[in-house]
Image (cartoon, rainbow, N blue to C red; front, side, top):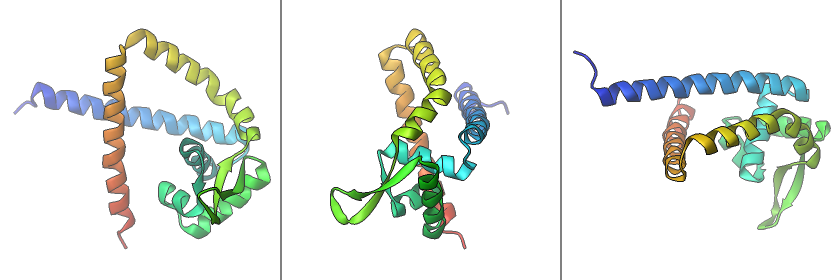
Length: 156
């Protein structure tokens, strides 16, 4: 029995989403190499930057690493000059990790051309309402993905 048109579109969307994730992963591998860090460290930098700073525990949860592994990541990122530990303004007993201006300077060389083309392409192709809908889709996929990350993390 052939799939309904809606089901076919969902399958195409999932395929395109996964292909985009694979392409993003390949780009991140090259970016990590250009920055002189490993892929896990770059993944953590991205999570820290996207959140505007994270505690070590939050970072561990966000990227699926142990607290011990995150300590090693943050140590390496500090040595590279890409991250720093700062007191959490909301709780002085806690430390947050944030990216440094040096990281932004290096990252701009890698991601600014891509971001500029994304912005130009999206602005010329989609209306504000369509962009809002696409954003809604991505947030939904992130919510579903987070639930399944948590599910997988609970496996022994």
